[in-house]
Length: 92
Image (cartoon, rainbow, N blue to C red; front, side):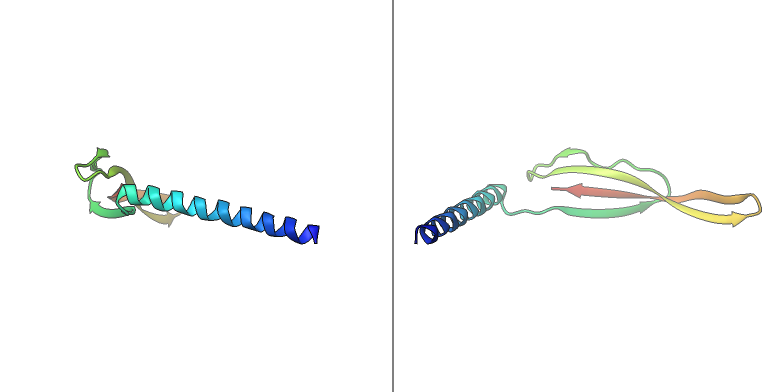
């Protein structure tokens, strides 16, 4: 009997901890406005700069420049050349 009460108390404590952590996550998400992360990709023939910093809507944005390589195999081995660039802009 004593074991059943201890197990029930442990389960109640675990449920309370879980639900309070869910409320904190929900509250934090509500303060942010419920926005998520979005990513856009743009293709260019040369490396370009994206926007890095805070926007007027409250997002923080950063970017990556990714080379598009085309590789070929010849007698001398593998030869890779950059044929273009992808700018990946991420805001969260």
